[in-house]
Image (tube, rainbow, N blue to C red):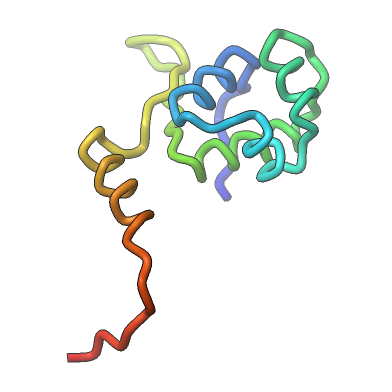
Length: 105
């Protein structure tokens, strides 16, 4: 994945995780980080090295977070990668199931 151009702190990680509605356990598993340590980091503990922060960022991006770097208009932020309509459509696709078929026309 791509390298972020800003340092993500615990509050930004917590905001991204809540915005994407993903548990600490799920993100921890995806980032190979202990969920209890992730919660400590989100509360302000400076316990992660650059590699752990990058894995955490990559996991959050995979679950739909989009980080906005600081610029002349404002500070670092996070937003959803998908619109509200897109999220509803993705949730609908999750429940479709059924066998995979050949789609050649």
